[in-house]
Image 1 (cartoon, rainbow, N blue to C red):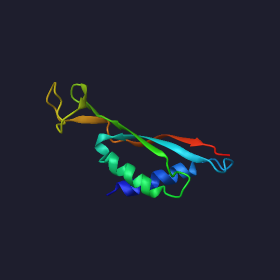
Image 2: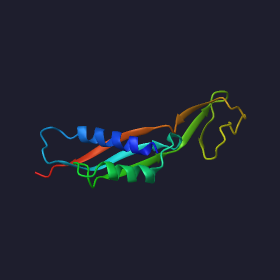
Image 3: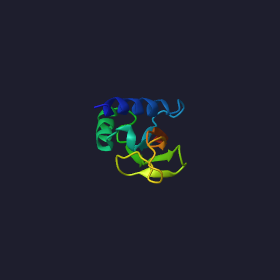
Length: 117
C-alpha cells in the first residue's frame, strides 16, 4: 500500500509548513488534488493519514481530496476530451497518439493552520 508512504510525506510537508513563530498552531485541513491515473485510493490515503498524524500538530486535521479527471489531447487531430473508460483512442480520428493533459497529479494545494495561542 503506497498510500502510507504518501501520507507520511504529506504529514512531513504539512508539519514543515507551520511557521516557527506560531508555537501551538495546529493544522486543520490539508487540501490535495489527485489525478485518477495516480493510483491513489482516497479512503486508504485518509486512513493512513489519520494513523500517521496521531500525536502531532496534524492530529484531527481533515484531508480533503479533490479527484481530477483524465483529460487527453489527440496529437493527430488536436481533439481534447475527458477519458471516462479505459480506452485511450481519439473518438474523432481513432488515433492512439495522445498527450495526457491531466490525471496524474498529486499536489498539496493548500494547508490551513489555526493558531491556538
